[in-house]
Length: 225
Image (tube, rainbow, N blue to C red):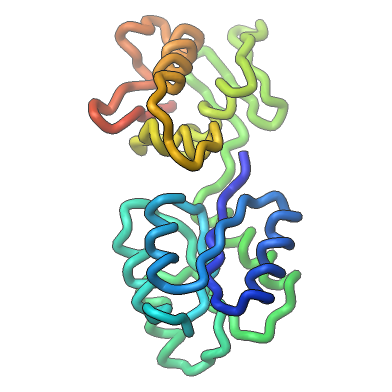
């Protein structure tokens, strides 16, 4: 599953360069050229991380930073700016920034910082134990008492996404956007149908689930041992 990065930069040539290189690194990228668009995209796209310039038209970057911090979804935030005053840095960190990079910067350094922030915020789950079932996300395989249990690729993608968010409510809309890749969420029961199939494979009693529970009106929550 690709992680999503929101690039907030009004310099179009720099935004294109960042977009190209982040895509090459395997990220999905969305771009905003001003502060208000950035806030809207963050709400709609739910990125894993944002690269935010402080000098933006319409809405100042520090105000955007403040609004990101107040949003419902925690995401990583790296400030990219030519402003190197100490007070700007301190305020950015107080508002929730995870890192602060001043222009000009090297691409290798920025990419290293992107990966570092993502590792700190949301380590990639390599395995998952649910009762006597063990799921290996490195090999994308599963077994129970040394016997293979067959999952579809999409079933493992959903399980992996939720394993990285154990204990959190994951909405149907979020799964459709982040796992299925829909930009505009359709009216469909494909998430519910897939969850039902997962429960048949991971739960002793699918009608009274122990691990994959419904959060009524919101989505689903994975509880692991």
